[in-house]
Image 1 (cartoon, helix red, strand yellow):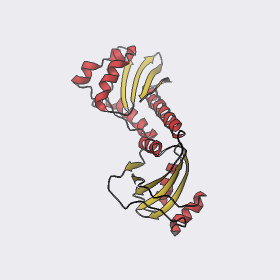
Image 2 (cartoon, helix red, strand yellow):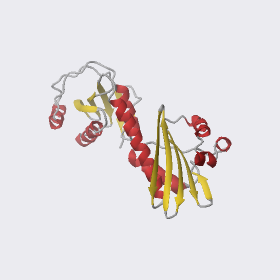
Image 3 (cartoon, helix red, strand yellow):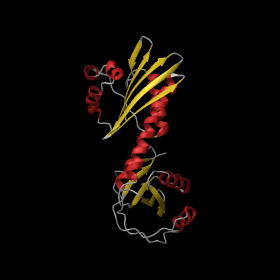
Image 4 (cartoon, helix red, strand yellow):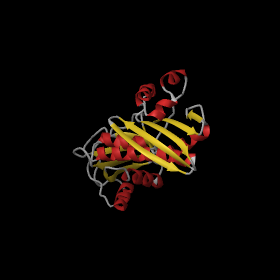
Length: 251
């Protein structure tokens, strides 16, 4: 998500950029990290300055900002204007991702608070959009091969994370052979929906290194997989051969 944020503090006005206003930038980045949303800021170099002025954000002129955002190739763009209003801070925000657009406001006693609320609101809107798409489609069972699963603790963390994603009906272990685990994720949506949800977080990263081809896995599984499957209340079942999705568990 690319964030264009203007701060109006009395007679002082400024944009938060990748190389400027570090305290405010780190507040936004910290809240985005907490919500699992990768965040970047404009460079505010000469090219940006020629296209975008603070007056564009304050006046709600979004076309120049949308045009300037294209160079960053972000998945989503957040535009915010926060200002001091007496003893409080007020924020006006617009979030766009593809064909989706949301507008919302925030208020807090401090600049930090109103900035955090802006990121929090954007993350909630993103989650709701992706949750909605996760309920569309015929539903699939997707095989995930995950590297970096050193033991049971890593596997439980991975299973609980996947089970908590919107649109996931069940997570069924198929094979556990540290440092690799293979799971079937049963969805109400599609594999593409699952990939989009995973991309919003910072738990799994795409694994580019080729591995063994995924194939039909017997329902009995090995002892470790059967034990974890019993704990999860799900019995492993045969899965049709498929290339599946490959990820690496981040620590």
